[in-house]
Image (tube, rainbow over all chains, first blue to last red; front, side):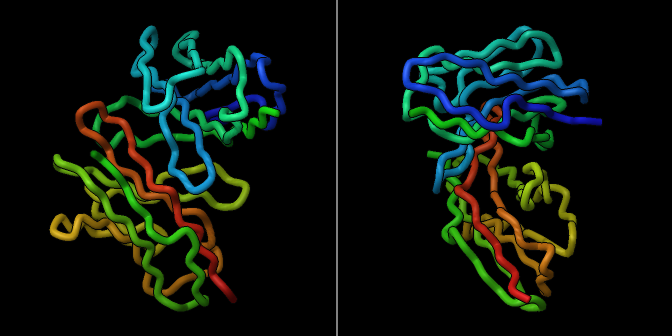
Length: 114
Length: 109
């Protein structure tokens, strides 16, 4: 049981390049999330999808787009990467977004924008 | 504004000593609090949640509404407890988690 799988694990981009971070979960969870983690800060929510077919902005959505392709997959796209987007990105999923729904995390993607 | 503060970036204690990782929160509603842990080369995972009032791997955490704290404690630290620990608060207006910056716990032999 793989849980939450993120690809790639590492990526270096040049400023202005685009890329898509992929995330898939095999736990039949309804809700999926994208976070970024910067040094000295907690995880910050970029976008989330409470259920298949819906997406909503989180705390720091600027510069990103997402697609909930189906119940399993939730991708994060950087259309024009900027150095400020250098970060570690985590995908997570939960059964639902309700109180006490445990979040399950991927292993993270370390992205560097030069 | 909702906020979670973990005042210690790094905490280093000897094996067998008591451990307390601090977490303070600012929240206007009734808080739902969690501790997550990330061991080396492993994924971030749930350690415990306050509503369950459980003890996991010897760790406990009590919600103190008067002090707005949810400190994580263990009476006798073990080397395998070395990890990053994150405190998180569930915002019940949108059910999203608000995270602290994390504390790196190092257990010295």
